[in-house]
Structure formats: C-alpha cells, structure tokens
Length: 384
Ligand SMILES: [Zn+2]
Ligand SMILES: [Zn+2]
Image (cartoon, rainbow, N blue to C red; front, top):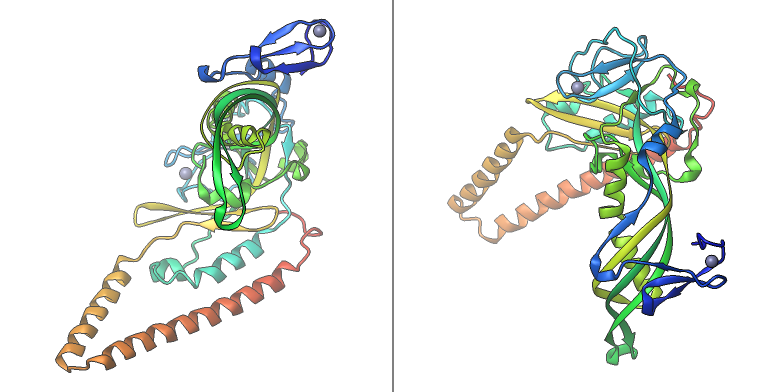
C-alpha cells in the first residue's frame, strides 16, 4: 500500500494498528483486530458501468418455467429441452437484455461424443441405479452451456490477534508452545471464483468445472458464443464478492496470519481486514450439461468443456436395495435351517470377494480404455 499523501512507502506500526509513511510521516489507521471489521473492496456501480453491457451478439432469452433457469441462446441451437431439468421449453420472442457483458471466456475444447461415451461407460458401474436409468439414453439433452463465474483479485491488509502454536523439540519430546501474538499482514489474493449460477452455487457437481486458473482465460469475444448458450448470472457481482470476503477468504486470511508468525498452528484468531485494489472478471466457463427427470426428481450430468472431467447425480433404485436385503435375509434363514455354521460365513465371504474381483477387473478395463481415449487430440475438431 502506498501513502495517499505523497506516494511514499507505508510501513507497519503494530503498536498503533496503523501504517506510517516513511517519507511524510502520515499515519493510515487500521481497525483493531477485535473489531472484526472487513472494509473496502470495490465500487460496484462503477465496476458494472465500466464493464459495459455490449455482448456483441443478438440472443434470445430462454426462461424455463419448470426449474427457473435462464439462458441466452441461439434459436437454431436449442433442442427444445431445458439442459438443466429436461423440461420442454419455448424461446421468448423478444431480444434479451443480457445485462453486464462477460470480459473473459474459456472456450470449449471437447466435443459432445467423448463426453457421452465417457458417461455411458461409467454408468455401467452404477449398480444401485434403476436399470431404466443405467441403460437408457438419459443424455438426450446434453447441451453446451457457458456457466457464469465471478473471479476476484484483491490486495488485503489484516490486523490480527490470536494464539499461535510453534512446535518445539523433536521426536517424542515434541510439543506445541502457544503464545498470544498481535500483528499486521499484507496478502494478495488472485483467482477467487464464485459460481454465478444460484442453482450450481457451491454444488459439488461443478467442482471439475470450477477448477480453472487465470491462464485458461482468454478475453471475451462474441464469436465464441455463436451456436452456444450462456446462463444468465443469478448471483450478482456484489453478492459474489460478499461471499468471497466474508466466507471464502476467512481461512486464507487466518492462514496468512499463521504464516506471518511462522507458526505451525493457531487458535482464536480475531482480525480486521481492509481490501483494496480489488478487481473482478466475469468469466464464462464451458460446461456440457444435461438434466433428466426420473421419478419426479432432476438428475444432472455436468462435464467440463475443457478437459471432459465431470460429475453426475444418479437415482438410487429402492427395488434393487429391497431385493438385496430380501436375498440376504433368505440366505441367513436358509443357513440357519440347514445348520451350515462356519460354512455359511465362508460361502458369504467367498461371494463378496468374487464380486469385488469382478468389479475391480471391469473398472481397470474401463479405466484403460478411457486413458486411450484421453490421448485423442480434439483441438482440430469444430465445436458443435
Ligand atoms: Zn507520505
Ligand atoms: Zn428447466
């Protein structure tokens, strides 16, 4: 942080909970740690105004009546099914007001077929799912969708007080020595991402998708959106930033305090943080998405459009569970009637071991064929 008065360098003064300019002597006071105040950040109205709303494409807004998803789409591109829930949808006739325009995008690199192939391959292992789901063409509405992410970069300065533990001694005589410390720490945070889709906010389904870094991003260009849909953010910039500074950065800030004390562990840290030089990116991340209704519930499949890794929710077959329990009980009853004794246990274990071996072999075969597929270079293929 630079001195606002003369541009000189500010140095910490822990005793005064402030920063003192080494040139003009001006003091910039900071909040005391026990106040627990988090201040600063950005002027959202200015940031949004600066970002502009020029998407550079004309899109229609699709609003799904069934699940509430909002997508900007190309007329030709939609299958008529909502990729979030599988419901039939109709496009609205009006030109959509797209709101603030994205400033970064991660292009799709992987076409549809490998994603489908991979999903059906792994679906074979979903023993506990209903057969209709396991063998059915559940990926009918697999659609490429750009999911919005807000990513933040910020500088921070934290005053803290807390107990810090240092390990002293080695081997059996090692123990933790706790001391109360107070200090100031400065830390830069980059690429803190929040999913702008309320439906997928903190959803483990999108974990493989949200693991992107700044180097994956390219500046947004309208051409990249042609033939694609983009979800409209349902979590705004301000809400996303509040989540980052109040929840997401909490652990990182305490970790920065620990590192500043060269401690091995900490407890009861109180801190106040001032954020500055905060900037954001509105990123469109590529997701292959499908939603299917089964038994009144929605099961989603989501896979990263950059590396194909994905996740899905699958239904559980109650019928299969009941059948398994009935068989188990029948076996125990039969074993008692026939008075099988230790043989009953041995046979049971043998059956479990045999099933496990078959499972492991199937798994290994599937894994190796997947690895063969992963060698394929899709970069020359055109996105559909
Ligand atoms: Zn100064
Ligand atoms: Zn829907």
